[in-house]
Every structure is written in structure tokens, then in C-alpha cells.
Length: 128
Image (tube, rainbow, N blue to C red; front, side, top):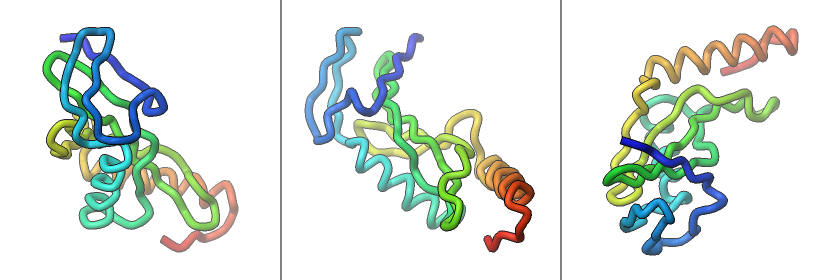
């Protein structure tokens, strides 16, 4: 099954029916903005407050439309430190799913790794 990745700046910003030249048709009920909101809510309630949604890509495949939302780790004084994983959001019904390569433990471990790297580069203790 082939999958096509469409950068978010190429996708309508509002709820619309979409048609792609790859001949995949579907209802785009969940916009990029709403997908990011859902991911942010999930992260805040299940993982922590220093993680947030990045700019998603739309994945188009045989019978599915999904937002691939990067999970970004940021600190107030340093800004974005990097991506710690990805969460998939079904663009038709809004269901969230951690990508196959990402678990809650991976999100935490990757965030800790980025934190330690930032702390060693700044030479200061950073508050989490």
C-alpha cells in the first residue's frame, strides 16, 4: 500500500472536501489546526507541558487521510530543542494514534535526551 506525504502548507486550512491527483478522495473533517489542538491536549494531559505539536504533514494512502504531527520539545528560555516523536491524527474522524516508531516512553526518553544535551551546551542547570 503506497502512502503520499503532503506538506501542510499545501492543504486547505478549513474543513473542505479534497481531491488529490493521486486519485484518493475523502472527507477532510479534521483540519491541520484542529489536529494540532488535539495533539496538544493529549500531550498536556498524558505526557507533560513542555511538549507541543509541530507543523504536521498530511499522509494520503489507500483508504485513509492522516495528519502526521511531530511532537516538539521546547523550553521557555531556549525555544524548540527538537522533535521527540510523532502522533497520527485521522483526518476524517479525529482519532489519535502514536506512530509505530513512537511510544509514551519514547517521547519522555527523547525529551530527556534533548534536555540533557541543552543543559550540557548551556553549562547551566535547567528547571524542568
